[in-house]
Amino acid sequence: MSSAELVWFVAGLLVLTAATTGIARWAGVGLGAAPFVALGRAAVQLTVVALLLRGILTVPATVVAFLVLMASTASWTAAGRLGRLWHGRRIAVAGVLCGATVALAAVFALRLVDPDVRYLVAVSGIVIGAAMTAATLAGRSFLRGAGQRRDEVEAWLSLGATPGRAHLEIGQEAVREALLPTLDQTRSTGLVTLPGAFVGALFGGASPAEAAQFQLVVLAGIALCMTITGVVVTRLLGRSPFVVATAGD
Image 1 (cartoon, rainbow, N blue to C red):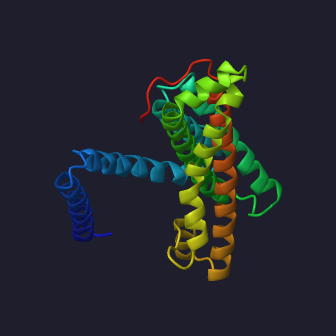
Image 2: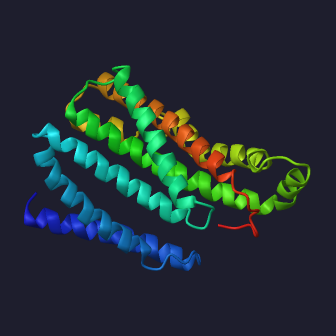
């Protein structure tokens, strides 16, 4: 990319982000400078990752350290979102690690993709990110549901039910809410959306059939990962001996 192309590229990104910020401000959403901050962080992080991957992909032994870094960052992010909940930080970490580990182990144990370093890094990044999203969505939905249905929880507890039973339906609803966007996207893949894994595989030189195959593996892995993460997070949160005081995020 030449200097002129780079300048144009950066300017284009700034225009898109400025439009996002301006529309949010006009609509009273209250994002402030968050879109610019998020894009700036993404730019720095992606630059660092791109430089690191040049060495990581040529030295397989460093892949494990990179995967640990991704998992740790995802766990830390999800933990911060669930800090208000009973043992929320530890539960978020447990959910992310359980969901991502089981899904990745299943994908590679079934040999749905070649056991190649490039595939390992690509699939792991997507699945770990999905686990982080599932932990956050399920946890926040659980908090909101527990607050809104506080009387119901107290009624169950007064009848001698365990905290887990009292929060069971709230947790189930929270997992469903966390999974719906992903399931909707999966159903509309190819008709409404062309997911990043499919497009990336095409740009990487794969045939359309190979790209589609890779995307299907990714979608199945994401669904499994998010389901496990959501269930682990909500079931552990449901063991709380305390009743949520108020509804909200």
